[in-house]
Length: 170
Image (cartoon, rainbow, N blue to C red; front, side, top):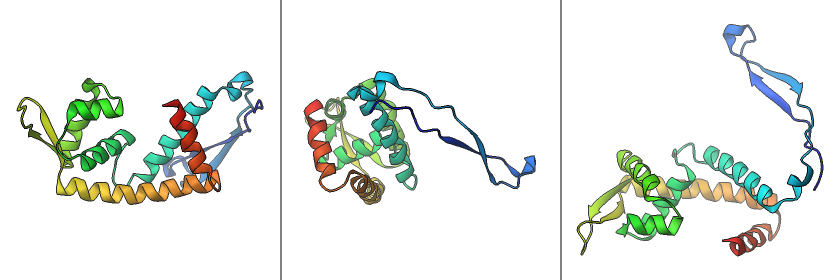
């Protein structure tokens, strides 16, 4: 896997005020960059795959405007009605300081709500709203389409093999 990156062509879109009529203009090719041993490092490959995956996920979820962590949180709340914030944080490996603004955003959008917990009234039980359940349902449909595209690129049994290998690292 030690090879130079393919020379990529960078596309830029000029706007009409610059006199190009909004057409796409090909920029000069980028000089090939040698990756040396990076190309053979598992961690580097995982990170690059994760970056590509998140980019594609965000494109797939544009209609419902969800980021990966928001999708995961909504899924956990749906699967575990009344789950506590601390349980979601522990399950997803999130810091509470990062989770609170995320949950506030989901509440602001009318997707999730906090209810006083029982028996401990100091903790919040999390629930999806009707709107949140509908958005999650559509997100799952979009996610299935996205996963299908990934599975097609991985080939027959590739998805299952990849998941099996990744689970060994978790």
